[in-house]
Image 1 (cartoon, rainbow, N blue to C red):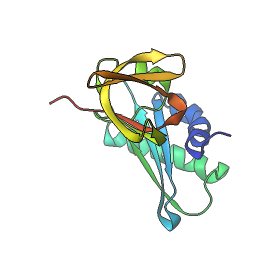
Image 2 (image 1 turned 30 degrees about the horizontal axis):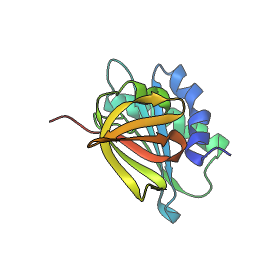
Image 3 (image 1 turned 90 degrees about the horizontal axis):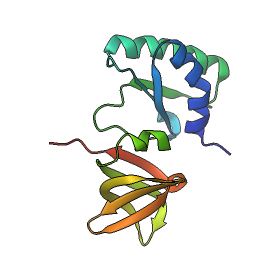
Image 4 (image 1 turned 135 degrees about the vertical axis):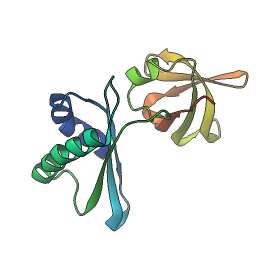
Length: 151
C-alpha cells in the first residue's frame, strides 16, 4: 500500500504539471490537530513566492474536493531549496558525488542515520560511502534523504 505522501503526490501531480511546474515531492506529517501537507515544486527558471501561492491555491482546491487527509491540516507549498529532500530514485541519480544525510525507517547494521557521499544507484538500492565503507541501502527503507549544501 502506498504511503499517504505517495498518495498525495499521485493526486497532485497532474495539477502541478499542468501549471508548468515539476512536482518534486510531497510529505504528510501527521501531528494530531496540527498535521502538515508539504508540497515541493520545481522549475528550471526557479520558484518565486507567487509561484508557490498560485500552486497552493490550485492544489488546495484539489485537496478539498478529493479529501485525501482526514481532519485539519496546514498546506505548505515551497521550492525544494538547495538542501533538497530526495523522493525518487531518479532524483538520486542527479546528485551522484554529493553528500547526503539519510535517515532510515529502521536500523541497518545498528544505525538509522548515515551521512556520506552518494556513489550511485544499483537497482533499487542507493549506494552511499561513509568514510571508507560503502552501504547499499534499499530505497524503500529510506525515511528521508537530504542533499547537503556545499559551503
